[in-house]
Amino acid sequence: MKKIEIVLRIGVFGTFLGHGIFAYMRKAEWLAYLTTVGVPLKSAPDVLHLIGMLDILIAFIILIRPVKVVILWAVFWAFSTALIRPFAGLPIWDFVERAANWAAPLALLILKGWPKRFKDLFRE
Image (cartoon, rainbow, N blue to C red; front, side):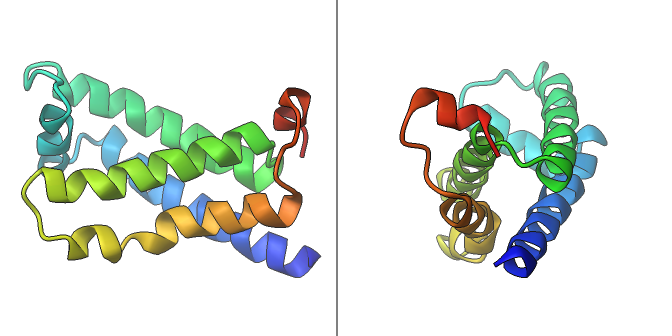
């Protein structure tokens, strides 16, 4: 199981690091996703920059010390960012092809044990 956990941690790390770098660099195509959820176009590049920094931080936390609350956030965030694509006018397949982005952190969370109590969220 430890080998599977390591592979999942590396996979989530790669996903969040790669997306984080693109967001940090203010990838132009992603601005539409933010405006879809109500972020003004003028503010979207700065918000995207902050999202990038957060994604990079999430990547390293999951690689080094995968605390359950951070893994849970990764599941929620990856699912949300995949789901926003059809709402932004892209085909549903843009959501479907990103299933691994949220399924890998979900598998990691299940492998580590779903948190049963609030304090379990802050444990590995």
